[in-house]
Amino acid sequence: MTLVRISDDALAIACGADAVARAFAEAGCIVERVSSWGMHWFEPLAEIDGMGFGPLAPGDVAAVLAGSSPKALGAIEDHPFIARQQRFTFARAGKTRPLSLEDYAAHGGWHGLERARSIGPEATIDTVTRSGLRGRGGAGFPAGIKWKTVANAPGALKYIVCNADEGDSATFADRMVMEGDPFMLIEGMAIAAHAVGAHRGYVYIRSEYPHAIAKMEAAVALSAELIAPFVLEVRVGAGAYVCGEETSLLNSLEGKRGEVRAKPPLPALEGLFGKPTVVNNVLTLAAVPFILANGAQAYADIGFGHSRGTMPIQLAGNIRHGGLFEIGFGITLGELVQDIGGGTASGRPVRAVQVGGPLGAYHPPSEFHLPFDYESFAAADALIGHAGITVFDDTADMSAQARFAFAFCAAESCGKCTPCRIGAVRGVEVMDRIRSRSGRAADPVEHLPQMRNAAKAPRTLSDEIALIEDLCETMKFGSLCALGGFTPYPVLSALRHFPEDFGAEPQQQVAAE
Ligand code: SF4
Image 1 (cartoon, helix red, strand yellow):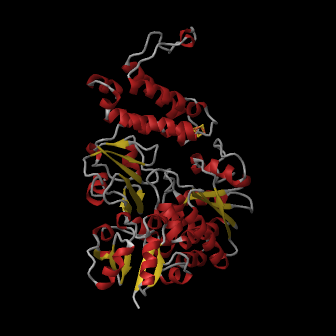
Image 2 (tube, rainbow, N blue to C red):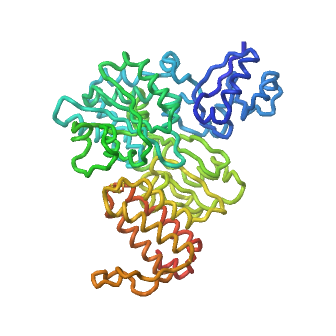
Image 3 (cartoon, rainbow, N blue to C red):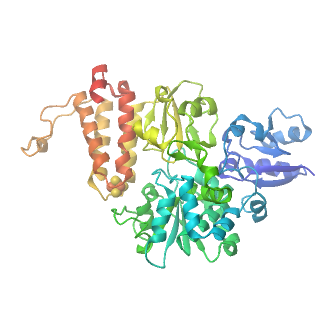
Protein backbone atom coordinates (compact mmCIF):
# COMPACT_ATOMS: atom_id res chain seq x y z
CA MET A 1 0.00 0.00 0.00
CA THR A 2 1.31 3.45 -0.86
CA LEU A 3 2.49 5.57 2.07
CA VAL A 4 1.78 9.25 1.59
CA ARG A 5 3.14 11.94 3.91
CA ILE A 6 1.29 15.25 4.17
CA SER A 7 1.89 17.99 6.69
CA ASP A 8 -0.63 18.82 9.39
CA ASP A 9 1.01 22.19 10.02
CA ALA A 10 -1.49 25.06 10.29
CA LEU A 11 -0.29 26.61 7.05
CA ALA A 12 -0.68 23.34 5.14
CA ILE A 13 -4.15 22.89 6.60
CA ALA A 14 -5.07 26.45 5.63
CA CYS A 15 -3.98 25.63 2.09
CA GLY A 16 -6.22 22.52 1.98
CA ALA A 17 -3.98 19.70 3.24
CA ASP A 18 -6.82 17.96 5.12
CA ALA A 19 -8.89 17.54 1.96
CA VAL A 20 -5.88 16.25 0.02
CA ALA A 21 -5.07 13.80 2.83
CA ARG A 22 -8.67 12.52 2.77
CA ALA A 23 -8.51 12.07 -1.00
CA PHE A 24 -5.35 9.94 -0.71
CA ALA A 25 -6.94 7.88 2.08
CA GLU A 26 -10.08 7.33 -0.01
CA ALA A 27 -7.83 6.18 -2.86
CA GLY A 28 -6.52 3.42 -0.57
CA CYS A 29 -3.26 4.99 0.59
CA ILE A 30 -1.83 5.03 4.09
CA VAL A 31 -1.59 8.68 5.04
CA GLU A 32 0.87 9.94 7.63
CA ARG A 33 0.50 13.50 8.85
CA VAL A 34 3.98 14.88 9.34
CA SER A 35 5.66 18.22 9.99
CA SER A 36 6.12 20.76 7.22
CA TRP A 37 9.19 20.99 5.01
CA GLY A 38 8.74 24.76 5.09
CA MET A 39 8.28 25.21 1.35
CA HIS A 40 5.05 27.11 1.74
CA TRP A 41 4.37 27.82 -1.89
CA PHE A 42 4.11 24.07 -2.54
CA GLU A 43 1.52 23.39 0.17
CA PRO A 44 -0.40 21.16 0.26
CA LEU A 45 2.70 19.11 -0.45
CA ALA A 46 2.59 15.31 -0.54
CA GLU A 47 5.63 13.05 -0.30
CA ILE A 48 5.75 9.49 -1.60
CA ASP A 49 9.04 7.58 -1.29
CA GLY A 50 10.96 10.83 -0.98
CA MET A 51 9.39 12.38 -4.07
CA GLY A 52 7.34 15.55 -3.71
CA PHE A 53 4.11 16.66 -5.35
CA GLY A 54 2.55 20.06 -4.92
CA PRO A 55 0.70 22.23 -4.55
CA LEU A 56 -2.04 19.63 -4.66
CA ALA A 57 -5.82 19.71 -4.71
CA PRO A 58 -7.97 16.60 -4.11
CA GLY A 59 -8.51 16.34 -7.87
CA ASP A 60 -4.75 15.87 -8.40
CA VAL A 61 -4.54 12.66 -6.40
CA ALA A 62 -5.41 10.22 -9.20
CA ALA A 63 -2.67 11.59 -11.45
CA VAL A 64 -0.13 11.48 -8.62
CA LEU A 65 -0.89 7.80 -7.98
CA ALA A 66 -0.87 7.03 -11.71
CA GLY A 67 2.60 8.57 -12.04
CA SER A 68 1.41 11.21 -14.50
CA SER A 69 1.12 14.30 -12.30
CA PRO A 70 2.43 17.55 -13.74
CA LYS A 71 2.93 18.63 -10.13
CA ALA A 72 5.76 16.18 -9.53
CA LEU A 73 8.71 18.02 -7.94
CA GLY A 74 11.31 15.27 -7.88
CA ALA A 75 13.20 14.30 -4.74
CA ILE A 76 12.35 16.82 -2.03
CA GLU A 77 15.79 16.60 -0.41
CA ASP A 78 17.32 17.61 -3.76
CA HIS A 79 15.11 20.64 -4.31
CA PRO A 80 17.40 23.71 -4.31
CA PHE A 81 15.38 25.35 -1.54
CA ILE A 82 16.08 22.38 0.75
CA ALA A 83 19.48 21.27 -0.55
CA ARG A 84 21.00 24.70 0.08
CA GLN A 85 19.99 24.81 3.73
CA GLN A 86 21.96 23.86 6.83
CA ARG A 87 19.19 22.38 8.89
CA PHE A 88 20.23 21.89 12.51
CA THR A 89 17.06 22.94 14.29
CA PHE A 90 14.78 21.86 11.45
CA ALA A 91 16.62 18.63 10.63
CA ARG A 92 13.44 16.58 11.17
CA ALA A 93 11.13 18.99 9.31
CA GLY A 94 8.91 17.10 6.88
CA LYS A 95 10.19 13.72 8.09
CA THR A 96 8.50 12.94 11.39
CA ARG A 97 5.03 12.77 12.88
CA PRO A 98 4.95 15.62 15.39
CA LEU A 99 3.46 13.63 18.27
CA SER A 100 5.25 10.36 17.65
CA LEU A 101 7.78 9.64 20.40
CA GLU A 102 8.93 6.73 18.27
CA ASP A 103 9.71 9.00 15.29
CA TYR A 104 11.43 11.53 17.52
CA ALA A 105 13.69 8.93 19.11
CA ALA A 106 14.43 7.32 15.76
CA HIS A 107 15.62 10.66 14.35
CA GLY A 108 18.07 11.60 17.09
CA GLY A 109 15.66 12.78 19.75
CA TRP A 110 16.66 12.82 23.44
CA HIS A 111 20.39 12.40 22.71
CA GLY A 112 21.01 15.97 23.85
CA LEU A 113 19.22 15.45 27.16
CA GLU A 114 21.05 12.16 27.74
CA ARG A 115 24.34 13.91 27.11
CA ALA A 116 23.46 16.80 29.44
CA ARG A 117 22.54 14.37 32.20
CA SER A 118 25.77 12.48 31.73
CA ILE A 119 28.11 15.49 31.78
CA GLY A 120 26.31 17.44 34.53
CA PRO A 121 24.95 21.00 34.83
CA GLU A 122 28.23 22.89 34.77
CA ALA A 123 29.54 21.18 31.64
CA THR A 124 26.12 21.59 30.00
CA ILE A 125 26.25 25.36 30.51
CA ASP A 126 29.85 25.39 29.31
CA THR A 127 28.82 23.54 26.13
CA VAL A 128 26.05 26.02 25.39
CA THR A 129 28.40 28.93 26.08
CA ARG A 130 31.12 27.57 23.78
CA SER A 131 28.61 26.95 21.00
CA GLY A 132 28.09 30.72 20.77
CA LEU A 133 24.30 30.32 20.88
CA ARG A 134 22.62 33.70 21.27
CA GLY A 135 18.98 34.45 22.05
CA ARG A 136 16.97 33.99 18.88
CA GLY A 137 14.08 36.15 20.02
CA GLY A 138 15.84 39.27 18.79
CA ALA A 139 18.09 40.51 21.58
CA GLY A 140 20.93 38.14 20.69
CA PHE A 141 22.13 37.79 24.29
CA PRO A 142 24.45 34.79 24.83
CA ALA A 143 22.32 31.92 26.13
CA GLY A 144 25.12 30.33 28.15
CA ILE A 145 25.74 33.51 30.15
CA LYS A 146 22.05 33.82 30.96
CA TRP A 147 21.93 30.18 32.08
CA LYS A 148 25.03 30.63 34.22
CA THR A 149 23.52 33.68 35.92
CA VAL A 150 20.42 31.68 36.84
CA ALA A 151 22.45 28.65 37.91
CA ASN A 152 24.58 30.81 40.21
CA ALA A 153 21.64 32.76 41.64
CA PRO A 154 20.81 31.83 45.24
CA GLY A 155 17.62 29.93 46.02
CA ALA A 156 16.23 26.46 45.42
CA LEU A 157 13.24 27.53 43.35
CA LYS A 158 14.03 28.45 39.74
CA TYR A 159 12.04 28.47 36.51
CA ILE A 160 12.46 27.92 32.79
CA VAL A 161 10.12 30.02 30.67
CA CYS A 162 9.84 29.58 26.94
CA ASN A 163 8.75 32.68 25.09
CA ALA A 164 6.44 31.38 22.36
CA ASP A 165 4.57 34.65 21.92
CA GLU A 166 5.69 34.89 18.31
CA GLY A 167 4.00 38.11 17.23
CA ASP A 168 6.28 39.62 14.58
CA SER A 169 5.06 39.95 11.03
CA ALA A 170 6.64 37.35 8.70
CA THR A 171 7.57 35.02 11.52
CA PHE A 172 6.42 31.44 11.89
CA ALA A 173 9.51 29.45 12.89
CA ASP A 174 8.40 29.13 16.52
CA ARG A 175 5.01 27.91 15.36
CA MET A 176 6.63 25.38 13.04
CA VAL A 177 8.77 24.05 15.88
CA MET A 178 5.80 23.66 18.20
CA GLU A 179 3.52 22.16 15.58
CA GLY A 180 6.12 20.06 13.81
CA ASP A 181 8.73 19.03 16.38
CA PRO A 182 7.35 19.77 19.86
CA PHE A 183 9.54 17.19 21.64
CA MET A 184 12.63 19.11 20.47
CA LEU A 185 11.47 22.20 22.35
CA ILE A 186 10.58 20.11 25.40
CA GLU A 187 14.01 18.48 25.29
CA GLY A 188 15.68 21.90 25.06
CA MET A 189 13.74 23.13 28.08
CA ALA A 190 14.57 19.97 30.02
CA ILE A 191 18.26 20.50 29.28
CA ALA A 192 18.02 24.12 30.45
CA ALA A 193 16.25 22.98 33.62
CA HIS A 194 18.92 20.40 34.29
CA ALA A 195 21.64 22.99 33.72
CA VAL A 196 20.31 25.69 36.06
CA GLY A 197 18.58 23.51 38.65
CA ALA A 198 14.96 24.34 37.79
CA HIS A 199 12.11 21.93 38.40
CA ARG A 200 9.26 23.69 36.68
CA GLY A 201 8.85 25.38 33.33
CA TYR A 202 6.23 27.14 31.28
CA VAL A 203 5.70 27.50 27.56
CA TYR A 204 3.91 30.80 27.00
CA ILE A 205 2.13 30.52 23.64
CA ARG A 206 0.14 33.22 21.93
CA SER A 207 -3.58 32.54 21.73
CA GLU A 208 -3.51 32.98 17.95
CA TYR A 209 -1.70 29.61 17.66
CA PRO A 210 -4.42 27.05 18.51
CA HIS A 211 -2.70 24.23 16.60
CA ALA A 212 0.60 24.87 18.38
CA ILE A 213 -1.15 25.01 21.76
CA ALA A 214 -2.87 21.67 21.13
CA LYS A 215 0.34 20.00 19.92
CA MET A 216 2.42 21.30 22.80
CA GLU A 217 -0.15 20.24 25.40
CA ALA A 218 -0.27 16.75 23.90
CA ALA A 219 3.52 16.53 23.64
CA VAL A 220 4.01 17.69 27.23
CA ALA A 221 1.64 14.95 28.42
CA LEU A 222 3.34 12.28 26.30
CA SER A 223 6.86 13.15 27.42
CA ALA A 224 6.19 13.93 31.10
CA GLU A 225 7.98 10.83 32.39
CA LEU A 226 10.98 11.31 30.11
CA ILE A 227 11.73 14.79 31.42
CA ALA A 228 10.86 14.15 35.10
CA PRO A 229 11.50 15.51 37.66
CA PHE A 230 11.17 18.60 35.47
CA VAL A 231 7.50 19.57 35.14
CA LEU A 232 6.28 21.54 32.17
CA GLU A 233 3.05 23.45 31.60
CA VAL A 234 1.59 25.28 28.62
CA ARG A 235 0.15 28.72 29.27
CA VAL A 236 -1.78 30.75 26.71
CA GLY A 237 -1.40 34.49 26.20
CA ALA A 238 -4.26 36.84 25.51
CA GLY A 239 -3.13 38.57 22.33
CA ALA A 240 -0.90 41.43 23.47
CA TYR A 241 2.17 41.97 21.29
CA VAL A 242 4.06 43.44 24.23
CA CYS A 243 3.84 40.11 26.07
CA GLY A 244 6.61 38.97 23.75
CA GLU A 245 8.84 41.23 25.87
CA GLU A 246 10.18 39.00 28.61
CA THR A 247 9.18 40.98 31.70
CA SER A 248 5.72 41.68 30.34
CA LEU A 249 5.40 37.96 29.60
CA LEU A 250 6.37 37.16 33.19
CA ASN A 251 3.70 39.53 34.49
CA SER A 252 1.15 37.85 32.23
CA LEU A 253 2.25 34.41 33.43
CA GLU A 254 1.72 35.57 37.00
CA GLY A 255 -1.82 36.56 36.10
CA LYS A 256 -1.08 40.27 36.10
CA ARG A 257 -1.56 42.90 33.43
CA GLY A 258 0.95 42.41 30.60
CA GLU A 259 3.01 45.46 31.47
CA VAL A 260 6.77 45.81 31.11
CA ARG A 261 8.89 45.74 34.27
CA ALA A 262 11.83 48.07 34.70
CA LYS A 263 15.23 46.36 34.74
CA PRO A 264 17.07 45.77 37.00
CA PRO A 265 16.29 43.38 38.51
CA LEU A 266 17.06 41.04 35.65
CA PRO A 267 14.65 38.11 35.23
CA ALA A 268 17.68 35.84 35.58
CA LEU A 269 17.85 36.98 39.22
CA GLU A 270 14.26 37.99 39.99
CA GLY A 271 11.97 36.64 37.30
CA LEU A 272 8.81 34.58 37.56
CA PHE A 273 7.25 35.02 41.01
CA GLY A 274 10.45 36.83 41.96
CA LYS A 275 12.62 33.74 41.45
CA PRO A 276 15.65 33.27 39.17
CA THR A 277 14.27 32.49 35.72
CA VAL A 278 15.64 31.55 32.32
CA VAL A 279 13.48 33.23 29.68
CA ASN A 280 14.44 32.01 26.22
CA ASN A 281 12.75 32.10 22.87
CA VAL A 282 11.50 28.88 21.22
CA LEU A 283 14.32 28.85 18.64
CA THR A 284 16.98 29.33 21.32
CA LEU A 285 15.76 26.37 23.34
CA ALA A 286 15.11 24.31 20.20
CA ALA A 287 18.76 24.74 19.15
CA VAL A 288 20.03 23.28 22.43
CA PRO A 289 19.39 19.53 21.80
CA PHE A 290 21.53 19.70 18.64
CA ILE A 291 24.32 21.47 20.51
CA LEU A 292 24.39 18.94 23.33
CA ALA A 293 24.06 15.95 21.03
CA ASN A 294 26.67 17.08 18.50
CA GLY A 295 28.97 19.20 20.63
CA ALA A 296 29.56 22.94 20.90
CA GLN A 297 32.06 22.96 18.06
CA ALA A 298 29.64 21.48 15.51
CA TYR A 299 27.39 24.47 16.10
CA ALA A 300 30.10 27.10 16.47
CA ASP A 301 31.79 26.01 13.22
CA ILE A 302 28.88 27.50 11.28
CA GLY A 303 28.18 31.21 11.20
CA PHE A 304 29.70 34.62 10.70
CA GLY A 305 31.69 36.80 13.10
CA HIS A 306 30.10 36.75 16.53
CA SER A 307 26.87 35.27 15.15
CA ARG A 308 27.46 31.53 15.42
CA GLY A 309 25.35 28.62 14.33
CA THR A 310 22.32 28.67 12.08
CA MET A 311 19.30 30.92 11.90
CA PRO A 312 15.89 29.71 10.72
CA ILE A 313 15.05 32.64 8.45
CA GLN A 314 11.43 33.19 7.51
CA LEU A 315 10.60 34.53 4.05
CA ALA A 316 7.18 36.09 3.66
CA GLY A 317 5.18 38.98 2.27
CA ASN A 318 5.16 39.57 -1.47
CA ILE A 319 7.64 36.80 -2.26
CA ARG A 320 7.55 34.00 -4.82
CA HIS A 321 9.10 31.26 -2.69
CA GLY A 322 8.02 31.94 0.87
CA GLY A 323 8.94 29.57 3.64
CA LEU A 324 11.49 28.59 6.22
CA PHE A 325 15.15 28.70 5.25
CA GLU A 326 17.67 27.64 7.91
CA ILE A 327 21.27 28.49 7.19
CA GLY A 328 24.41 29.71 8.93
CA PHE A 329 24.68 33.45 9.59
CA GLY A 330 26.46 35.41 6.89
CA ILE A 331 24.32 34.80 3.83
CA THR A 332 23.48 38.15 2.22
CA LEU A 333 20.05 39.73 2.28
CA GLY A 334 20.04 39.79 -1.52
CA GLU A 335 20.67 36.05 -1.77
CA LEU A 336 17.80 35.42 0.58
CA VAL A 337 15.32 37.65 -1.22
CA GLN A 338 16.31 37.23 -4.84
CA ASP A 339 18.05 33.86 -5.22
CA ILE A 340 16.23 31.81 -2.62
CA GLY A 341 12.97 33.72 -2.38
CA GLY A 342 12.79 34.25 -6.14
CA GLY A 343 11.85 37.94 -5.88
CA THR A 344 8.28 39.12 -5.57
CA ALA A 345 5.19 36.97 -6.05
CA SER A 346 3.69 39.81 -8.08
CA GLY A 347 6.61 39.70 -10.50
CA ARG A 348 7.25 43.42 -9.97
CA PRO A 349 10.62 44.76 -8.78
CA VAL A 350 11.40 44.57 -5.07
CA ARG A 351 11.19 48.00 -3.53
CA ALA A 352 11.98 47.21 0.08
CA VAL A 353 12.24 44.41 2.56
CA GLN A 354 11.53 44.73 6.24
CA VAL A 355 13.68 42.57 8.47
CA GLY A 356 12.86 41.86 12.10
CA GLY A 357 9.10 42.26 12.32
CA PRO A 358 6.91 45.36 12.41
CA LEU A 359 9.60 47.31 14.26
CA GLY A 360 12.44 46.31 11.96
CA ALA A 361 14.10 48.61 9.44
CA TYR A 362 13.22 48.77 5.75
CA HIS A 363 16.03 47.93 3.35
CA PRO A 364 16.11 48.93 -0.32
CA PRO A 365 17.91 46.67 -2.84
CA SER A 366 20.99 48.89 -2.46
CA GLU A 367 21.49 47.24 0.94
CA PHE A 368 21.12 43.68 -0.31
CA HIS A 369 24.86 43.18 0.19
CA LEU A 370 24.35 43.11 3.98
CA PRO A 371 25.38 39.81 5.58
CA PHE A 372 22.59 38.38 7.68
CA ASP A 373 24.06 38.58 11.18
CA TYR A 374 23.52 40.58 14.34
CA GLU A 375 26.51 42.91 14.04
CA SER A 376 26.21 43.78 10.33
CA PHE A 377 22.59 44.75 10.74
CA ALA A 378 23.31 46.75 13.89
CA ALA A 379 26.04 48.64 12.02
CA ALA A 380 23.46 49.50 9.34
CA ASP A 381 21.12 50.89 12.05
CA ALA A 382 18.89 47.85 11.67
CA LEU A 383 18.15 44.56 13.40
CA ILE A 384 17.51 40.97 12.44
CA GLY A 385 15.08 40.39 15.31
CA HIS A 386 13.41 37.02 14.99
CA ALA A 387 14.65 36.75 11.38
CA GLY A 388 11.38 37.40 9.61
CA ILE A 389 11.75 39.03 6.19
CA THR A 390 8.74 40.77 4.62
CA VAL A 391 9.07 41.68 0.95
CA PHE A 392 7.36 44.65 -0.71
CA ASP A 393 7.21 45.37 -4.43
CA ASP A 394 7.42 48.78 -6.11
CA THR A 395 3.77 49.59 -5.42
CA ALA A 396 4.43 49.96 -1.67
CA ASP A 397 3.89 53.40 -0.17
CA MET A 398 6.64 53.73 2.40
CA SER A 399 5.15 56.73 4.18
CA ALA A 400 2.08 54.57 4.81
CA GLN A 401 4.42 51.93 6.24
CA ALA A 402 6.05 54.55 8.49
CA ARG A 403 2.61 55.61 9.70
CA PHE A 404 1.75 51.97 10.34
CA ALA A 405 4.79 51.62 12.60
CA PHE A 406 3.52 54.43 14.84
CA ALA A 407 -0.06 53.13 14.70
CA PHE A 408 1.11 49.64 15.63
CA CYS A 409 3.10 51.00 18.55
CA ALA A 410 0.14 53.12 19.70
CA ALA A 411 -2.16 50.08 19.60
CA GLU A 412 0.23 47.71 21.34
CA SER A 413 1.89 50.05 23.85
CA CYS A 414 1.55 48.82 27.43
CA GLY A 415 1.34 52.44 28.53
CA LYS A 416 4.05 52.31 31.15
CA CYS A 417 6.37 54.96 29.71
CA THR A 418 5.60 58.31 28.11
CA PRO A 419 7.82 58.27 24.99
CA CYS A 420 6.00 55.21 23.71
CA ARG A 421 2.50 55.81 25.06
CA ILE A 422 2.27 59.43 23.90
CA GLY A 423 4.98 59.48 21.26
CA ALA A 424 3.37 56.82 19.09
CA VAL A 425 0.08 58.74 18.98
CA ARG A 426 1.85 61.99 18.16
CA GLY A 427 3.77 60.12 15.48
CA VAL A 428 0.57 59.00 13.78
CA GLU A 429 -0.69 62.60 13.84
CA VAL A 430 2.48 64.00 12.30
CA MET A 431 2.55 61.25 9.67
CA ASP A 432 -1.05 62.05 8.77
CA ARG A 433 -0.12 65.68 8.27
CA ILE A 434 2.90 64.74 6.17
CA ARG A 435 0.88 62.33 4.05
CA SER A 436 -1.98 64.77 3.51
CA ARG A 437 0.49 67.60 2.84
CA SER A 438 -1.87 69.75 4.89
CA GLY A 439 0.63 71.50 7.16
CA ARG A 440 -0.39 72.61 10.62
CA ALA A 441 -0.64 75.89 12.53
CA ALA A 442 0.84 75.99 16.02
CA ASP A 443 -1.76 75.57 18.74
CA PRO A 444 -2.06 77.89 21.81
CA VAL A 445 -0.09 75.57 24.05
CA GLU A 446 2.85 75.78 21.71
CA HIS A 447 2.87 79.58 22.14
CA LEU A 448 3.50 79.29 25.89
CA PRO A 449 6.96 80.62 26.85
CA GLN A 450 7.98 77.33 28.41
CA MET A 451 7.41 75.54 25.09
CA ARG A 452 10.78 76.70 23.84
CA ASN A 453 11.16 74.01 21.22
CA ALA A 454 7.68 74.36 19.75
CA ALA A 455 7.21 75.97 16.37
CA LYS A 456 5.19 79.20 16.55
CA ALA A 457 4.55 79.54 12.84
CA PRO A 458 2.71 77.01 10.64
CA ARG A 459 5.03 74.14 9.96
CA THR A 460 6.54 73.35 6.61
CA LEU A 461 7.06 69.82 5.38
CA SER A 462 10.68 69.96 6.42
CA ASP A 463 9.60 71.12 9.90
CA GLU A 464 7.32 68.09 10.13
CA ILE A 465 10.07 65.73 9.03
CA ALA A 466 12.41 67.27 11.60
CA LEU A 467 9.68 66.74 14.19
CA ILE A 468 9.42 63.07 13.24
CA GLU A 469 13.18 62.69 13.61
CA ASP A 470 13.12 64.43 16.98
CA LEU A 471 10.25 62.24 18.13
CA CYS A 472 12.06 59.11 16.96
CA GLU A 473 15.15 60.07 18.91
CA THR A 474 13.05 60.54 22.05
CA MET A 475 11.34 57.19 21.56
CA LYS A 476 14.55 55.35 20.73
CA PHE A 477 16.48 56.55 23.76
CA GLY A 478 13.66 57.26 26.21
CA SER A 479 11.45 54.19 25.95
CA LEU A 480 11.57 51.52 28.59
CA CYS A 481 11.43 48.57 26.20
CA ALA A 482 11.94 47.67 22.57
CA LEU A 483 8.35 48.32 21.50
CA GLY A 484 8.73 52.07 21.84
CA GLY A 485 12.49 51.96 21.39
CA PHE A 486 12.44 50.15 18.05
CA THR A 487 9.51 51.94 16.42
CA PRO A 488 11.95 54.52 15.01
CA TYR A 489 13.69 51.83 12.92
CA PRO A 490 10.94 51.41 10.31
CA VAL A 491 10.06 55.12 10.41
CA LEU A 492 13.56 56.52 9.95
CA SER A 493 14.66 53.86 7.46
CA ALA A 494 11.60 54.55 5.30
CA LEU A 495 12.33 58.27 5.51
CA ARG A 496 16.02 57.80 4.76
CA HIS A 497 15.61 55.51 1.78
CA PHE A 498 12.31 56.68 0.32
CA PRO A 499 12.05 60.45 1.00
CA GLU A 500 9.96 60.95 -2.12
CA ASP A 501 7.11 59.02 -0.46
CA PHE A 502 7.09 61.68 2.24
CA GLY A 503 7.00 64.50 -0.32
CA ALA A 504 10.57 65.44 0.48
CA GLU A 505 12.79 67.13 -2.07
CA PRO A 506 16.38 65.94 -2.55
CA GLN A 507 17.76 68.63 -0.23
CA GLN A 508 15.28 67.56 2.43
CA GLN A 509 16.54 64.03 2.03
CA VAL A 510 20.00 65.26 2.94
CA ALA A 511 18.53 67.14 5.91
CA ALA A 512 16.72 64.00 6.99
CA GLU A 513 19.98 62.15 7.14
S1 SF4 B 1 8.13 51.27 25.43
FE1 SF4 B 1 5.88 51.07 25.26
S2 SF4 B 1 5.50 48.91 25.60
FE2 SF4 B 1 7.58 49.32 26.36
S3 SF4 B 1 7.34 49.86 28.54
FE3 SF4 B 1 7.20 51.79 27.43
S4 SF4 B 1 4.97 52.06 27.09
FE4 SF4 B 1 5.30 49.90 27.60
